[in-house]
Length: 429
Ligand SMILES: Cc1cc2nc3c(=O)[nH]c(=O)nc-3n(C[C@H](O)[C@H](O)[C@H](O)COP(=O)(O)OP(=O)(O)OC[C@H]3O[C@@H](n4cnc5c(N)ncnc54)[C@H](O)[C@@H]3O)c2cc1C
Picture 1 (tube, rainbow, N blue to C red):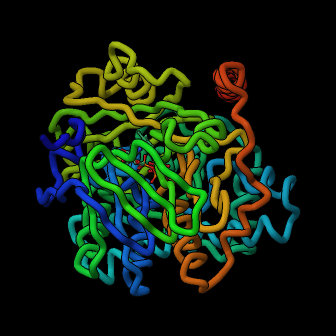
Picture 2: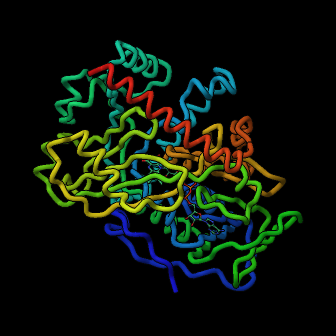
Picture 3: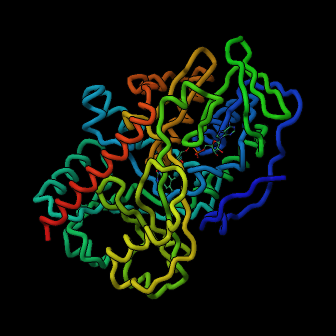
């Protein structure tokens, strides 16, 4: 029996329905990739284009995890800011890493163009908004980023941001015109289709249950298949289990939520008068955009270390939406869902080799749409010997996640940030 996608806006509007067969029997490959999200699919496509025999094993469906159910925001950067990256690796390497993150946005955009993925529904523009006065700091940051990285950023003063997003909450914003939003599930499935066309063997419903990684050829097993490969890549994200203990110890699974409102074009367009998406700068702040040709809002927000779903995700998020847009008080929620992200304690991706031929590419946190693209790309480049850019991530190793205490500390830190954000907002009233 095949597993299904969970019920989301994306699974309801997915364009194709092909199901890839489960892996069976003994299979030989150059590279076996475990976990079929966007990190995996980007690597699989690059490897297939480089003529490698790739076997992809996904426990559920292609892009079933975070990659196929996220907010769809694609922008430069990582889950942590430039200054904290700089503190760890110095100014030059931090800038190199930031430029790589911009390359990730470019990879997604170029792939959509090259493959003509129209159902990825790319829409340009993401505004990053503040819910307090920065007293010139936001405008200065906008200028610096424009100068240093050549990003197409436009500062939006209060009146302009409120004319686009009709909410009393926003004080100023930066509109990033290089960033965009899209339909990540259709994108992921298009990558799988192209990789398969080039000869990659894609297997859904193929959970990996054990692996022997010590020999020259690595052995990976599902219930009914045994894959022998020169290279194994783990891209199991927030769903990483016991099959990769070194990875499981090194990340925290963090849940986050999204809702989709009812069909109400006039009401939603009265509140959000642009097709650009918006996110606010609070830790795990709100992010939302119009979808379905401007007829509904897709609204995301909140994070928690609790990995089981709260009873009413919809009510939780809806409260946020109505506080931001009181005029939407009677707008109904049609569906809401959750997903798991992988966070390392240093908040940067974990990309590298556990031992020769055993690769990992994970922990993209809440900023995975551009970073899975570069993660998949640099790992594939490493495997085919085209570059060793994956080493740029070596300073962000597989540090222990701290176990139960690490989880508690992460939740407390989030609450502390929430309190600081609320205080800043209160002072700006
Ligand atoms: C609700 C939500 C909203 C988000 N919004 C955004 C956003 O707007 N912009 C952004 O940049 N990022 C966003 N993110 C983060 C982003 O989605 C993730 O960082 C990214 O998708 C992670 O991709 P991945 O390939 O590492 O993992 P995933 O996409 O989670 O894929 C991992 C896959 O591995 C499979 N797997 C696990 N174990 C096994 C096994 N043993 N055998 C076989 N397969 C296995 C799972 O089934 C899963 O499909 C969001 C995340 C969530 C959850």
